[in-house]
Length: 113
Image (spheres, rainbow, N blue to C red):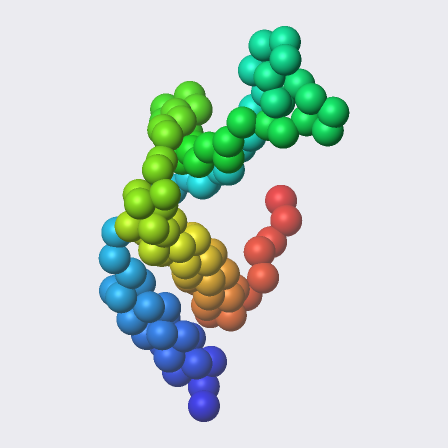
């Protein structure tokens, strides 16, 4: 099997996987607990029992961090979308690496100036 054939097979595998991905949400799901600072609250006890956990979705938009509260039903409903984004980024990395290999095998290694 030639290199070009191997590259084409790998490209087909990546393209097929990309076509199967549905909605994809970027960012992170974060589970946080907090302490309120009110004297006598359970979160100030010994041992402390913080409030929460609270779930939030955090992502960057135009260089700013955007956070949105997520309830347990939403977490269940959109979990696959977050997973899809991770798959999408992994496949994109694989496609980029494959493209670099294909170019370098076709044109040779880069030259220094």
